[in-house]
Amino acid sequence: MLNKLYCFDYIIVGAGIIGLSIARELIRQQPKATIAILEKENEIGLHASGRNSGVLHSGIYYKEGSLKAKFCLDGAREMAAYCYENNLPINRIGKLIVSQKPTDNKIIDLLYNRALNNGAKVEKIKQCELKKIEPYVNSATEDILFSPDTSVINPKIILLHIYHELINKNVTFFFNSQFTGIDLKKRKLVVGKASISYGHLFNAAGLYADRVAVLCGVEDRYVMIPFKGVYYEQVPNSSIQINHLIYPVPDMNVPFLGVHFTKSLEGKLYVGPSAIPVLGRENYSRMKGVNIKDAIDTFYEVSQQYLANKQGFRYYAHQEIPRFIKACFVASARALVPNIKASDLVKSSKVGIRAQLLDKHKRELVMDFIVSKSENETHVLNAVSPAFTSAFSFSKFIVNSFSSNL
Image 1: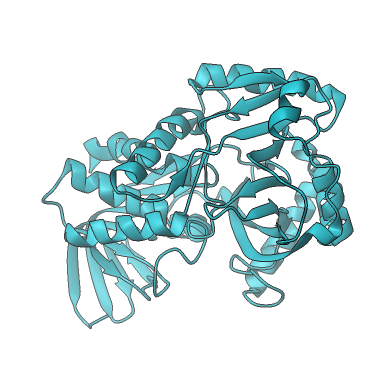
Image 2: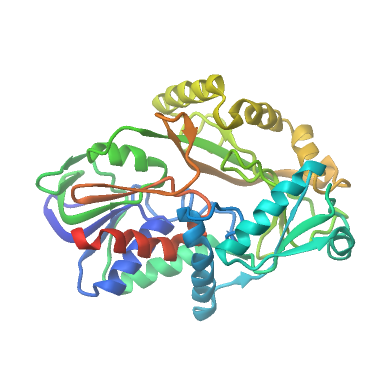
């Protein structure tokens, strides 16, 4: 970046799906606005958005009145329409949510009612119907939830299409650009040897959104805990045939969906993910991406959460940690597909890190999206699943909620 001053109406920090969708919405509302997107990497899609599961969720899980409930279903419909309109690959494969224990019937009923309240299309099917469409899948209760509209997409293809759309509409991208200072009064960022002034800044920095928010004067209430999701994938000669997405009834106390079966557009079957706290916000493999500050922060916050045992965190940790071992991971998969064997699965190169926010005051993992504001800045915090699904709908809310102050 040259040693000069740049001026834009809007600066967006982060070129993930939320940042791109905010830019897209700003252009829709204000075609003549000047917009720039800062991305610390040399291309888009290297982190959470590009490592997304590829599932367009259908609004089943989320508590009525939550931001996730408000935006997931509309977001899924808008994203699907975007794919159809632009000839981007999409497959409406459908999802089954099955029970692992007899007491899960209460949660099945809860999820069914939530889905109806959120406007999602969902059906209850019986075990005899399940065996016809998924003979390898087991349920511990008679009722199973079926979401026929749940689809799979390729996140990177969508990201690249939006990127080129924005380029064609004169959005400026600064890659390899991480700001090192900010003057809130002058509304100016320091990026390398350059300065960038802005009318309004949108913080869509994903894994680093909490730190950007603190730099902008937002209360230091939240901290990001990076949870790594590791997957296994089915070997080509496996005899197990899965036709839909298969999810377990979730633990409603934590914002994770448990080990599940997903299929890519190409038909590859993935099992996972795990959800293990790691030693860096980009600690995708072994020691690569380990960060001492992140490691200390994570160890402290996770240990405090374990001791406080809010949201049943201790039980969750005892359940999740053994999944480091393949045999334990496969045992979790067998709760859904009893005939699956360790030889059916190999470790996948697919891995992601969830930017999960922790509320340090309440000692709770944050379950919903959070949008916060400093004087001339809007901060999108805890943009985790279903953020990709919700992005188009969510970005309208982000822009509209604060447009009167921009």
